[in-house]
Image (cartoon, rainbow, N blue to C red; front, side, top):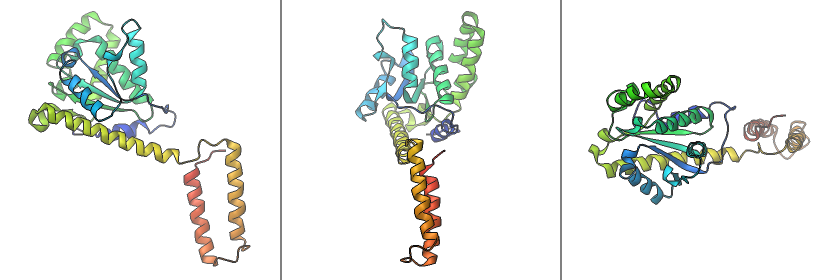
Length: 259
């Protein structure tokens, strides 16, 4: 993706703290968008993601009789990639801005969360600075909404606009079909990267109970000291010492146990 920071950097930032929650994702992608792209660009993007077998959530899937905001929050938490489609009328909706704030909190709190902004018919600077149509929308919000919430919306727009994303005006000469293909390709690449990291992490035995880890540790040191003590004359001393050190290093890095 093409802006100041890579989407992989935002993913890495999300995994930097061990205190953050790990997740079993319900969806690969959550789409956040305004009503002005619901039946055109976002619908086309959603279809393309579905064709690529990427499990995607859009708010048209909500059951309207329920608490929509509460359900939206749950679906945002359950999606590992949030794609935010910034359009001219996105900031007019307080619901969209609350949705964005929830997305940005999840980026801070959830391990492995990725946020990908899409600049459909607005420039990133308009989102970052709340100018143009975003400025007009915020002049209304200042009058009608809680001032603390409005300040948070501004901060979240700035933070999201600084993440790596795609801008229709500067991608594929503005051709929407090619642009959508590029976005889908980016998301596929991200899901494969995250799948690889997940598969690597699950090969460790961190899920073993402490008693099993202690037992493994005992057998490792008993077997390893047998080599060091010379009770296995089948191997030359140089090979034994090299193998012993290598296996010890492998054990520490692979098993990652904590007593």
